[in-house]
Each structure stands twice: as C-alpha cells, then as structure tokens.
Amino acid sequence: MRLTLMWEARAAQGRGAELLEWARARARVLAREPVRREVFRAPQDRVLVLTWWDAETFDAELPELPEPDAELITRPVHRWRFESVE
Figure 1 (cartoon, rainbow, N blue to C red):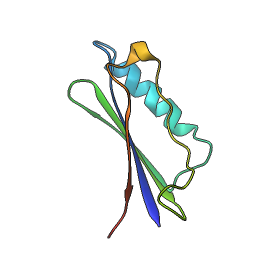
Figure 2 (cartoon, rainbow, N blue to C red; figure 1 turned 180 degrees about the vertical axis):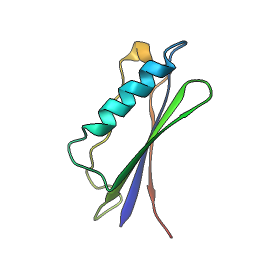
Figure 3 (cartoon, rainbow, N blue to C red; figure 1 turned 60 degrees about the vertical axis):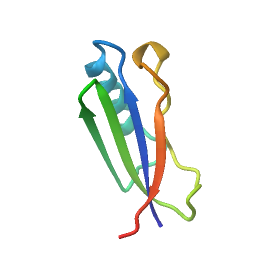
Figure 4 (cartoon, one colour; figure 1 turned 135 degrees about the vertical axis):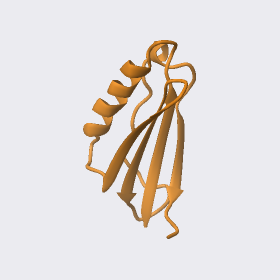
C-alpha cells in the first residue's frame, strides 16, 4: 500500500521563513528515504510536508518530522495519514 504522511505547522509571527527552512532540513534527513517528498508553504506562515511511503499497514512505523521548538510555532503540529486509492 502507498501511504502519504502529512505534517503541517503554522509559524510564530515573523518566523515563517525559519520554519520553512527547519522543515526542509528535517525532511531531508529522515531515518529512511521516502518514495517521494514535497514541502509547501501557504499564507499565514503555514508549512506543509508530504512524504509518500510503501507500507504493509496503515499504522506502519514510518519516519516522521518531529515537533519544532514551541517558540517557532503557534500551535501543535497537525499530522494525518492518507492511503492512496487511485
């Protein structure tokens, strides 16, 4: 099965560029190499990282980006897993 892990955070005021670079750096050094990875930014200093993985089960143990330091973000990171259906 192909799983997509989604990681999304919103930067503290004025720290969007810093959060973006933090996420890019962490996405490049995951414990394993994903099939694919993409990093996005959005208004209000939001950063989104998607990684695609081949996995046996929906709850497979996969490398994920950690939480940034609390002062870098405005709220806890949102994380979701999606299974490809196409």
